[in-house]
Length: 360
Image 1 (cartoon, rainbow, N blue to C red):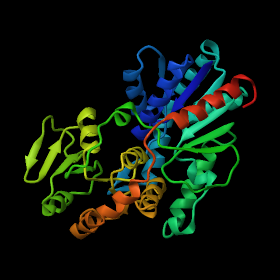
Image 2: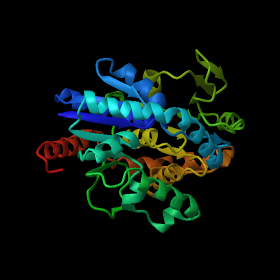
Image 3: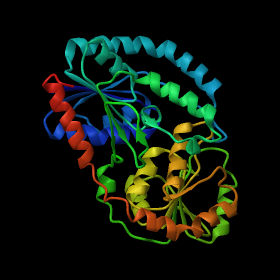
Image 4: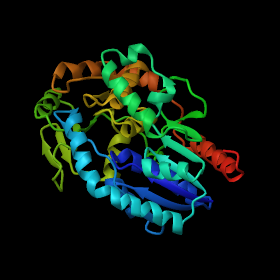
């Protein structure tokens, strides 16, 4: 079957997840054409040199002081859109001529979705964001973030409406409130599935946001080995300062450190959090301010007893309180099912069978 696959470029989680799905589709014999923006396009081109990965303009977010800046984000996207939209239109019509897709899969990407609706093709949404619109989020989870919740829900609702079906990847399970919706476990890359999981004593720290100059002092005060990624972006070799080991990003080394960590300290992005929960590692999460999707992830992490949500990694007591609760978190995580993508693949294959039969 000829499948047009769209990947939004904001945040690498979409690209990492899509790589897993595209690999599966290729393995079972489907023809794939990919449309992706920004870093997602670069990443997927490196992974799939033998299939078409087309660059297309996409939206992006601007962060300052660990918060989303909506005004700057809007203006930056308007400026970029003036140059990007004509390229999108050109790519749009080239697809009509050359590939003639029979179905569309979108990971929060709008152009492929619009192509599918315009040409009356079955469209499948695969992402984690749709949980905000298609499930009932309890008031206790939203409390204090009502404005961000309403803003994000309206955005998500308008992003990909009227798809044939929605596969939502998630580690938490609120009540589904809309039809044509299926919750599936986190979609895990092969490196995570193959990792040797051990209970080490070090903390894995992943923090790339600005405004955390005092975080190193907090980590130093713990006296625990911390393997730190992202805080020194340009280093090419490990730098050791007391109990802190600053490491350049390397996927193999990062996965090994994650799989052998005692616990994780990071932001609120879904991909790393889903991997952390799947590997049964407690996590202290500090979501971006104003980014309700990350706030939701962090609050459910705490709600389910898998870790803690925080607003301030610069307070040593915040981290020490998290460490004191590690036994409770580990007990709760011990009940998480063994990681696998089979449930997701089965749901995907079932939808493609229906699409091919004209029933989706």
